[in-house]
Length: 561
Image (cartoon, rainbow, N blue to C red):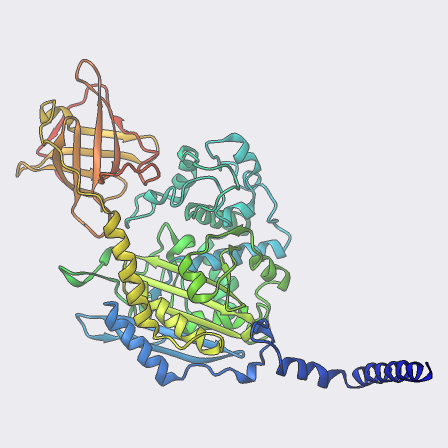
């Protein structure tokens, strides 16, 4: 009995001694716990001192291999780490014909990575108390109207930035691309009322460029200056970077990257319609900013430093920075992302996407235009920011480079040849596409009315006029009044349907024209659809219906383009 009591007292004394030791030496215990942590411990607990950033030589190899593999002339890459720009370099050619090299100051269109700048301009006005994210859009822009009055009344400033309007993805893009566009921003905002929703308001993520353009017009109205000027004065100038949302000086035009595409028939070819010519474009606030790797690195340097410039000036408050980085809409996570990056969470914030990669939070955005690709990413826990800009049309370049950089500081990630990885991935995607590809539609080529009955000028209430006519060479032609790149040959498909084969095959995919004919054989109107055997509901023509421009339609023969 006594022995049992003594054992109990000894155990109690030992337990008290261990507690005292733990309180007296708290820090060493924590370190020991980290040292012996299990493999599935959150990566955020790994010390930064153990991380080794990819070397310049290794990066050079990846970039050059990616350019060659994915048929891209040139690229510029910049890396920010621990508050410093540790790499900023150009690779390959900005202009093939003239044999001009890319450097860190070469200008590219940064496409949709522009959206973060548009969000930042609005955040500045929120800081100043001139607007709130919860404000109704119509209170600041009375001309803003959507097809549903309730949605119009409830649509907030935040909704403009979060891609949940209820419209289909890319709704209204027909007013933006292919460049050049003949629409004004006033017309674009007015035409939003003619775009029909496909989803309930705020229920579904569907990417929107036109809403960012609308947001920029609100910035312009409140600030009393064009959005591009506000962007320059409040962001670019404090950062001391020479980037542009509007007109560019001739000195800057001396170092621009020409845009290129590639196919098996033509090889690498120029895409001049998306080139940088120094003038502001309609889509500026959605994807039209022009910048270089050096300037983008300075931008990331500030964002990773609580939106403070190197001079200690705040671009906007940390509260607004956190607001821009707050998730608002969940995003789909692909099997590839789950398997390759261990991604279990993905969302859209305000002008940025968020996801976890091996447990680290990555804040990023990509940008895509025909001839330009961009990828901007930050991993705040690792004090890391990366910019990849290139003048090609294959996402394999930006993806391989980005992964090679960020995975170099993630010990959990296996050693992968990222260029080869994306070669294999694209091969798999192409195989799946080809397996689902339907045969090309085949028509009789026999029309039910004389050809001249189908010719004339037709008008849609928001897209404007198109003209169908026969030129001096006897070729039937199509042209759009507002979008001059949209012109091509008409081919008889059968019954009351025609096929448009666009002159610029890079600018748009071929399309059907279907005529509605009255019992008296007069033309009621026409609609357009993608040229495919599969019926597609959500497409760029879904909200267009063209009617004869006048009741007495006189066919335009021997027309002039």
